[in-house]
Amino acid sequence: MKKLSVSKIEWWSKLMFCLLGIINCLPVVYDWIKPAYQLATMMVFLITSWLLWGKKYRDKHFIWLFALFLGTQFLATFANARSHLIGNLVHIVFVMSICLITLVGDKEVGEKLVKWLAICLQFFSFACSVFALALAVSGLSTTLYYGKHVALRLGFHGGRLFGLLNPNGGALLAVISMTLAVYLYRHYPQYKKALMTNMALQFIYFSLQQSRGALLCAMTVLFLLTAFVFKKERIRQQILLLMTSFLLLFSAYFMTIKVAEKYGEFIRSESIERLESADDEGEYGESREFSVKSGSRSQIWVRALKMGQKQPVFGYGFRNIKPNMAKFFKTFKMKEALGGGFHNIFLTVFVASGMLGLVSFIVLLAYIAFSFSKYILLSDNVDGKIIMALALAYLPVQLVESIIMYSPSGFNIIFWFLVGIGFYYNELWMREGKNSETLS
Image 1 (tube, rainbow, N blue to C red):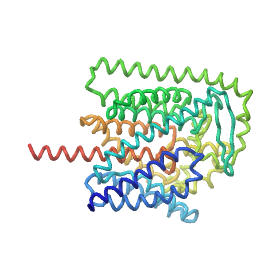
Image 2 (cartoon, helix red, strand yellow):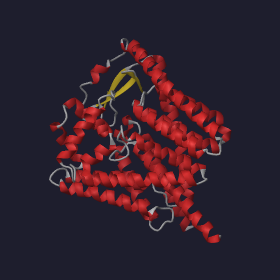
Image 3 (cartoon, rainbow, N blue to C red):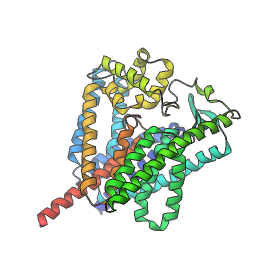
Image 4 (spheres, rainbow, N blue to C red):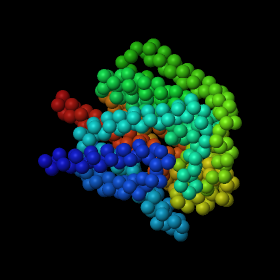
């Protein structure tokens, strides 16, 4: 009875946090649920820490490497103790709690959590895509203001479709949804029509976003699925499917750029507010939005690198980045850089915690990539492979975005849930392998 009650506590606490994380993908909602979200984070972190102590489905190497990275963050904070000490400490504990919450301690919880995560994301992505496509068809283009300094763009702006999510976020959600739909199809073939309908909507929605980061994610997960996950297919069929899919993705991506730009120009003349009216928004209100124009990332990277080189060992501390940016960024660039975390997770970590933090972070990601790649190559469990392929596809995106660290966004939570579930599958596979060797 005690074991059952502990399992239920872990299940309900993580399910609640998972649902809050998905809702948190919406910038509009975050300000409203922020207190409940932070309280839930602390509660679930304490519960998870208690449950994971001594559990068999945990990866000790991952925990130690994560602890090493956490140590570098505290070093950076105390090295810059004269500024925002308490704020940096609270932010570190909060964000790191998000990463550790997702580790799975119970087998029953691991099996149910991945299914519910996939199902909830199907409904969420369906609602987001329907809303955005309705805006596209209606021709509505506007900018709404809520809160003190926050703006919500709706419709086509700069040739890109904005809905409940910004273009990069919407495109990434579409890729995640389509990948998890493949997982659900294997378990619930009776819902094939519903899953295929949502996948079609997500593909259309994805095509209208013009997100290079999400396109990179889609190509990575597509390559892993066709080349390694479903490897029982014939080689010729794999290559044909891979080439056809890449061609379809590239064609849809580049064709919709021209179509969206022309359509956007047409409706912009009749829009409620022009995009230029949003240029003077609040200084940090768009911190959870991606930049409309992605061509200026190289300028941001160069200035962020110069900023990091001034304090290369311990960095500035995450909360100290904003006050020190004026020396390296113009006001306009500051909004773009802050909005995307320098649009590169490695630069963000370097500026925040110096070379110590960057090296430990790279080692942590390398261990995740190595463990998951090994599983994909050697294991026969297709479910685990799909989850790990999606987690690995997140990593190349971090070269042009910054969403898996220092961020309370739902996409950060989804990534770490994928990592936590992936390590659950990996530990289960390792234990079964050792047991089979003992029996033989």
